[in-house]
Length: 245
Length: 329
Image 1 (cartoon, chains in turn red, purple):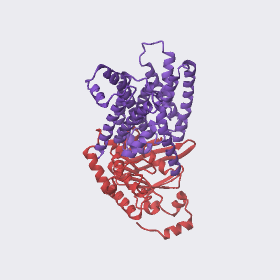
Image 2: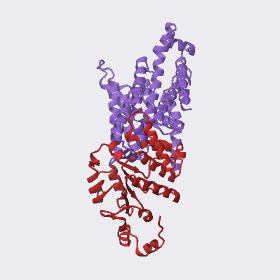
Image 3: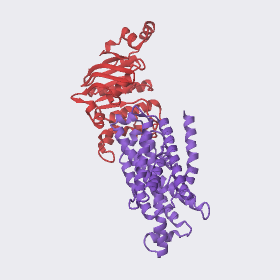
């Protein structure tokens, strides 16, 4: 169980998250929605331990701040957006997911098995020898999902996991998310597409210091206007063309 | 394939080392060099090969190893392809440390290796200073890092020039040595020392290959796979400062090796540091060995500072990188 209690994050003269509280159970899938700059990525960074925060983030009885980096990385994994370009193969990047478990100078047989399994599950096994600087943005996204699968974490943080993916790849990503939920993983994803957010079990609207957390039924006209700034006319048009995935 | 390529570089290094020993004012056939190294030669040949030239070759190999591997580490931990110990001011700091020890501790002859100690302290001081200048809220600004390095390097070089001018100005060879680098003060002990220190530091850097892999994709990426970024960076910076300052304290400033070599190695084996670090070290050693051979043979009867050769090779490559980056932007 993931417990976020009184979580606040502020950058100099700029409070981003203010006294945020929510609880997620194994298998829950939280879609985080909000305008640009509302603190969505900051929330993921706080849970990953990459920004300073006040309050408490707990997984079961473990307070994440008190855990060493390696132990935290066995619980929380992130599908990042935007990395420094470096000439690694797809295989090398997925191997990096095994870093928290490394005990010897080389990867163990178990590490390599996990990597192969992750590469095949996401469908990038054939790409394993290609350099990440030479593959498409969608293929890189899948590589990062494979990396986080190899990391074998309990909580997955996905920063716009379906961006750059074509429709077929989006469906693959969503079916992987569904499988992971069935395995009892907690998923937190930042989405810009309301259609995709609707498949989540919970939703968190963020708007500079304010928030609203609850079941997916909270995605309605009023909340979208209030937190996403979508006006009535556009909203009606949007909902008229709604596509169920 | 990979093993055979590694073998080729090793063989090339060995043959180049034999050639470097056989080349000089008294030319010795490569066969006699091998015999002398195995202990089967006359006293004169043995003296030239082992006492005079082997140390110099070991110094060139050790310095190349230190600069190549350190350049690779610095580029990865700062995620900056233009970073190297020279640009970050480590070399300028090392030289200043050595000169300060020569000026102020020259009367304390029993203080062996005080130059190396000062060199290390000043190298560490420089890198911490540059790191502090470029660090904003825990993250490194790459442009500020380079500019900070250039500024500190310029400041330390000015102090070094002042010291040389006021203290050693009558000796032009000293000025050339410290500003352009060279191996002509080498002996067997300094050669062995630099080689062993470079090798040990290099092995320690290699133990961090996973951290270096993750760090080269960004600080957040590294943290997310469990790397303690500030700890890894601190240890690696200390290793770089140790190995570079030790080499520089015997050779003076040899620029651009740390910049060029990791790029050559990366084009051969990609970004994976278990291989990249090894290749950076070997290519660095090979490059400096040949730079030394060229420095000794380009002008008959004279010896050029090695820094001139490495700069002639490095500057065009540096400019090529800058232009390529500009095109990519």
